[in-house]
Structure formats: structure tokens, C-alpha cells
Length: 306
Image (tube, rainbow, N blue to C red; front, top):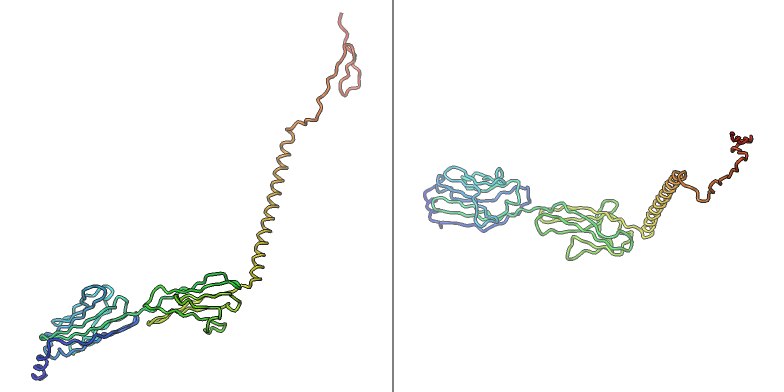
């Protein structure tokens, strides 16, 4: 490099700053934040490079530094192994490479290059986008003709705003428009209402949650019962319950009847019949013949001894 060129650079203003740029990247992707400078032309041994990150904290934090011929870093546990210089920083490219982006990597990055009293600054805002999480679909209401139901879905995480879109899936697996009785809740597009249900509403419904980073979906099935069939099913259920109750009652009465009969048989020998007559007493005159019961022989009375 000629002395004239060095003299020209030294005569420039003490600092140069580039307009701030913005990068948007999806989580788990890689990104290179550019930082190009000309200060390596002055004095290579005094070149100093510093990358700083300002996130939600008030003060910027040093991420990686080159000074005095060595590289220093102050990585957090989440940054270790993912932050490094992307190219040959000694030849004017001090770009920062970040691999496997995480939401915590988002923030304002500043590349500060210093050499021989000269400064160059590069400001970059990095936004890390997360696609919606797998949404959950569910239905509420009575699935019978003439009734009203609602279909809802919700994605619990992802970069806002998250947009919701409902579609119907036909028998061939193709998506199409919603049936005429379906209406989107304008204040909450993740919810649709269906009034005065008919059998035409039966089918699969898909909810798609999307944002700048991507999309995820879920499916819910709607089966509309005919009013007559619903009554038949309900009547059959009541009939089965009634029949089981009757069988239980008959069994219970039979058991009780047997227990009562057994009790009466055990107590019968101990009872005295109130209508039975007491045996009558027989008077025997002196000197009369005594006839023993069941004996037909006359027994003469004994003579008194003189």
C-alpha cells in the first residue's frame, strides 16, 4: 500500500457508520451478519474488531472480539458453539456467523472496527421468526340436525401475528370451501359457527395456523346425526336400561321370597297352635275297673287286706 493511500485514510473522519439494516430468519436456520471495513489497510497489528448485542437488557453485551492478534468471546451457554467470525476478518470481512438460530439470538447487533484512531460501525437488527406450534382443534355443541356447533383451533406459540384459515376436506382428500351454514367469527378467525345443521355439514375440517415463518395444521371431524335416528338411539338406550332394571327387580323379589319361606320353615316347630284343645281329665271311681289306654283287658281292682 502506498504512503499516499495511508495518508488519505488517516485524513478521513474519525468514524463511519452504515445505515441500520434488518434481517429476518426462521428459527433453526443459519445467518451471516455482514460487516465489511477498510481499516485493515492502515496498521494490521493495531486492528480491533468487536461485536456487541443489545437484546432486552439495557446495556449492550460483547459477543466476540479480535484484539492484539487474539480472539476473545463472552458467550452464554446458549451461544457457545454457534457464534464465530464468518470469514477472514484481517482482510476486511468481519462478518458474524450464527448457526441454528434461537429466539434468544434476536436483538440489535453492532460491529465496531477500530484502527489507528479510525472507527467504522455497522448496525443490524436480527429478528428470529418461529412458525406456529402445532394447533389444537376441537368442536363444541350438539351434533344433530337443526342444532348449532362451533369449531375452534389454537396455536400456543409462534411469532405474531398468527393467521387462521379453515377449509373443508372432501372424500378425495382435497381442500375446499366451507358449507353455506358455516360462518367465521370475525373477532376470532380461529373459530367458525355452524347453525341449523344438516347432513351436508358432515365431514373433515382443517384449520391452518400460519405466519411469516411457516404454517401448521390440525383436523377435526364433524358427524351430524339425523334427528329421527337420534331419537331411536335414545329410545333404545332407555329401553335397555328399563329392561335391565326389570330383571334386577324380579331377581330381587325372588331372593326375598326364598328368604321369607326359609324363615317360616325354621320357626314353625316352636309355635303353639292357639286353636288346639287341651286334653280332658278322666275321673275314676273307687272300685271301678281301670282300663289302661290302648289296653282292652279289664284289670280287677285290688282287695283291701284285712
